[in-house]
Amino acid sequence: MISKRIKEMIPSVTLAQSEKIAFLKKQGINVIGFNIGEPDFNTPENIIKKAEEAFHLGYTKYTPASGSMELREEVCKKFKKDYNLDYTVKDVIVSSGAKQSLTNVLMAIVNPGEEVIVPTPCWISYIEMIKLTGGIPVLVEMDEESGFDLNVEKIAAHINEKTKAVLINSPNNPTGAVYKKEDIEKLGNLAVKNNFYIISDEIYEKLVYDGKVNCCTAAISPEIKEKTITINGVSKSYAMTGWRIGFAVGPTEVIKAMSDYQGHTTTSPNSPAQYASIEALSNSEEFVQAMRKEFVKRRNYIVERLNAMDGISCFMPKGAFYVMPNIKYFYGKKYEDFIINNPMDMCDYLLEESKIAVVTGAAFLAPDNIRISYSNSMENIKEGMDRMEEALKKLK
Ligand SMILES: Cc1ncc(COP(=O)(O)O)c(C=O)c1O
Figure 1 (cartoon, helix red, strand yellow):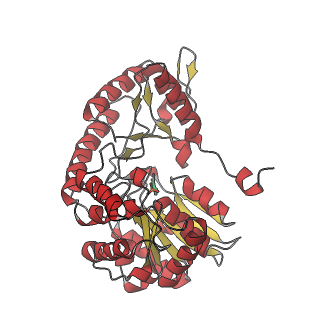
Figure 2 (cartoon, rainbow, N blue to C red; figure 1 turned 45 degrees about the horizontal axis):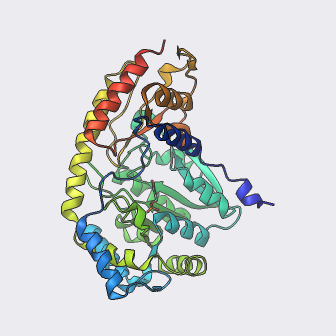
Figure 3 (cartoon, helix red, strand yellow; figure 1 turned 90 degrees about the vertical axis):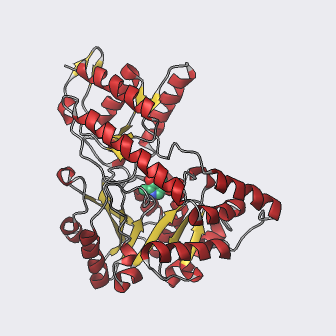
């Protein structure tokens, strides 16, 4: 009795993994979680205080479908301040997480049979979201040798009259790649010339390292801005994943269509969380800087440790909080009952043998990699890397 569209959905590969982890934890086993997709920091206290204030001030009712006027104004200010971009509240929609903004935009622009190009490795939800609209995901593999940088030539080879959008994500989950301005610009110019949209998921925008900053696609030129829907939110930048506030900015008619869809499916996003998100956007710079500094330390340490392990190669990611070591060297190697033939085998082995949880690259269309999140304490990262090194040495 289940619908065809849901039956055709590929269930999350990580779900089975999460069950195994939960099972071990329940037995009291100390599993170190490198599978985590959210900052391990607490939401800053000033934001929490604002949420409390919201309840007492009566921000407990529906807001307009596309979000409260005050938060949308703050989002406009953010884009002006960060990228010198001019948007009005009509060009902004606030959603229940960036994920809902992504679903909204795909529902708003993609007709059945139209194609959406996605560079891979990618966040797997994109593919299922595109399929739910009746659209066709066109997956284009980026190169590990270049740190999974945006390869516009490869994408260009897939553009045709059915192309409705290209969905990019920089800083990237799972690769940590931060796309170069010149590459995004090339893609933007193709969008203008061939009349398709760019959906630019910039949810990790504040987590860019080594003195670099996020390149906001829409800020490259007014023509590219007209073709771009930017997805963002408070989840990753302000450690607010559970508050479920994301937003999108873009051409007024696209945002209006997203809002019409959201109005019927959700009514409006969480009201007190919207109130608190104004504080996040306007008064959290110190927190962001401290978090970024800590992530840099962890990234540098983890990449050094991984590259010192025999058989592991790991490029230095420039953003987000993930590393993607290649584990191909271990294919065919064994220890006791374990044989490694793919990243899932490696995940199972590391979980059973060293009690560390990492995610299979297959979950992100990275067939020879595992994803390690360094959203964990330095102490746990050190202990986890020691355990991993020991376990890998046993594989012969
Ligand atoms: C690339 C990417 N985009 C969007 C999201 C969703 O963000 P939110 O929690 O605000 O829905 C995630 C969350 O993991 C993500 O990794």
